[in-house]
Length: 83
Image 1 (cartoon, rainbow, N blue to C red):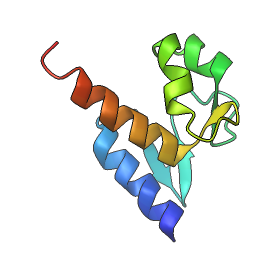
Image 2: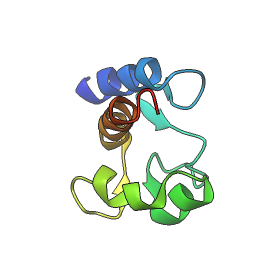
Image 3: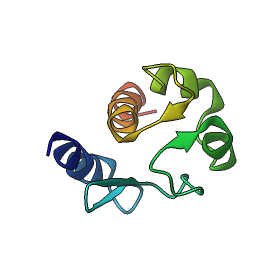
């Protein structure tokens, strides 16, 4: 239930179609493999800031999951607000 809540929060925080929740899944257009995680290759291919991947990958498993993405996205937007 917690993951579903986090995914729903991701949909709200990330805005217009970048992250959505469906049946408790993390869905982001960068996740081209549809495994509910974003690899570094997918991250870069989607044109997300390459240098930010390591910051987003909090558990250092080489994949960005829903909660990691939401945390990174929130912090990144706050740090770059008004730039």
